[in-house]
Length: 115
Image 1 (cartoon, rainbow, N blue to C red):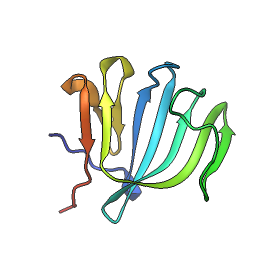
Image 2: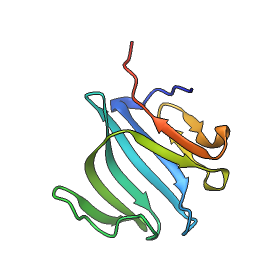
Image 3: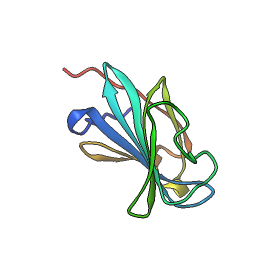
């Protein structure tokens, strides 16, 4: 088990290389009322599993500085991340944590109460 404090405003990001396109992806999150909420997905090119547009109410899709950016507000239940060394999975918040240090596996990210 590892713990990492969120950045200001309860935010954190998951960074990884897309398994097919082999380009960087950043998934952004925020903690709200003890729940994980995905707020954005940022990437260079479309690939399997990445959005092609805003398909839910309140979402906004844009091209910024040559990267695609989908703004959203999606509550996430348990957040499971499948990691592997080839994909350089990182959790970034107040610090940075290499998620591949435990080998190729599924990890569960859980918000813990402050205190």
